[in-house]
Amino acid sequence: MSILNIAILITAALLILTGLYMLINTHNMIKIIIAIEIVVKAVTLILAFAGYVTGQYAVVEAFIITMIVIEVVVAVVADGIAVNVYKNKGNMDVSELKKLKG
Image 1 (cartoon, rainbow, N blue to C red):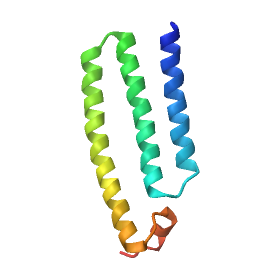
Image 2: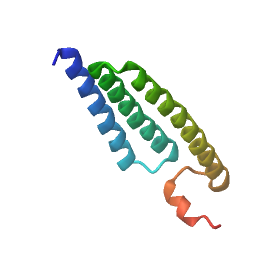
Image 3: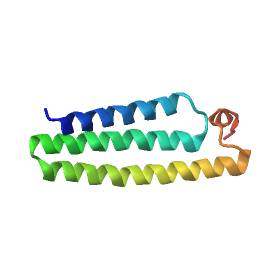
């Protein structure tokens, strides 16, 4: 393995660890959405690296584009839910979601 390959894998691992750390240590909905986005970007980086290593660029590009589209839809829906919770409760704490009725 070359230095570039090792650097890409280390970067992806650090991104995953950063995202997981943010998920564990926060209760703010926006920070949770950002943490999920960071983890998904790390997975995208790993997929791109796998396509580079195996030489299957077209398949990996299709997966990455599909992931980006799904990621954007999920992020927009999650942001909409976060804004609605903020309007109703006045804060973005996920522990407040337990108090919702309906």
